Image (cartoon, rainbow, N blue to C red; front, top):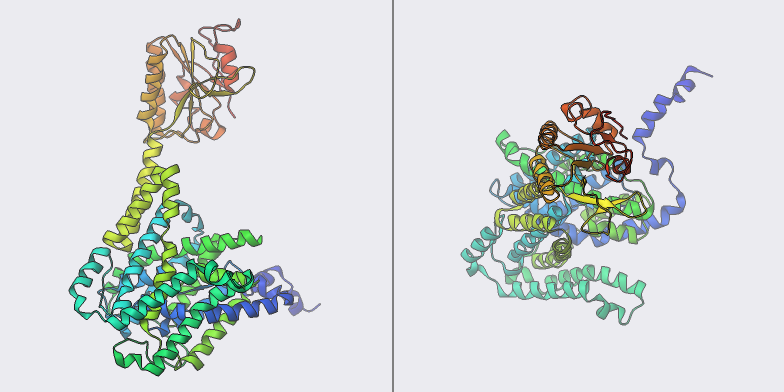
Length: 597
């Protein structure tokens, strides 16, 4: 065998090749091809008007929505973690782009477009570096309440921002007060024909989305009704373009998107005037990267679970990062995994990312062939489409559920929601996160400590206020249900003394430590002080069920070396040796054990 043949079979060379070619390409099953092609075509056709609308929402010319649906989509399809997730421009990234660029450049200008591409590049770099550092776990620290509250608040702002296309009033801002002030200042620009068109389109979109059962399923089979509902927006767009063309709506004061540049996006690095612009965009880029990862990974992981696929959060970070980096060099703005795009892609039968390649081919065809045909499309229709679709993101159900089951999560939802409306997206998200972490700290500072007794005929110990249990006059048993640290040490100390005052006959106190995973220095000092206080009152402190890693921390500290009592392997053992009815009980045992698990 030649050296060349040997090198080709070397494991390192195979590993490098495997990194360049994704598994779905090297192991592609041709039986998936028809379904992938159909899904790609369907998604490409249906999301063209949506992509145009999201570009407008971002403050960009409509064609940038198509640009954002080409190269970033190709890159993610090649390196992303999900086989069916369809990425592209979405409402949240669009409104965050508009909010972050507000005041830095004029909407729709070349400078504005460059800054949008710069933002995509910055977001991509942050996501990619997070993937390299394997920071996929960070998504666990954004509570459901915060993410739902943020998205709900953003949805309200998106809804209000689109009023400028339905009324012709130049509304601008990045918060509810600024939008309302802008609306009042420019109310004289109200245009009735535009408003009538926009409201009519909005009502039709709403009926199609929320009354589809009455409209379609009343006379069509379920499978056909589903496709009728999906194709209706495209049909409405086509009708609006036709009516706008024959009635010359643009000459009647109704704004249309006009000529769309013919051709593919240019490949060039984003330009910026100064480093101060980069610095001003950095906080938004970081928050946007976090939101993109949270929303995209939730979509990708959900479909991975439904399909039985593996989901790698770190690979998802890298895929989203590279997609946005590529978008930064191809006239895009930040992209993410889309809920509706992915649902259509999966429901249409997509099995692999090849479907996304077909979708890109449709987008390219739209740029090369349909650019002139789309010109008469009214902005009012795009605004109405976004307003109708964004309502579903206002997640009242999550708030109601949290309010009934977890008040702190409901508080986090409300903080993020109100913060977004009052102060804008970035500050609102930060407020929600701060309130969420403050709630977590408060919960940890108020640990649950139960006084327990033994259930008759068993070795189980349960809360005396919840179960019929056996208790002992000379023995007080308490279960600590939280790790011990500086934030809750005083609370634990106070709760123990309160319990001891209620049971003055108890000469032995046993703390069940089965739920304690860590004891920091402050907590160690608290336990040492508690032991000395008990000695002063002719009482003893014991522990049961200390975990091995915890004992490794405290075994050479005064918590153990000065302990007046014993460390028991189990609470049953403690009861057998310490209760008055045990004939072998030594009121002051001299042997101190350090048994633990």
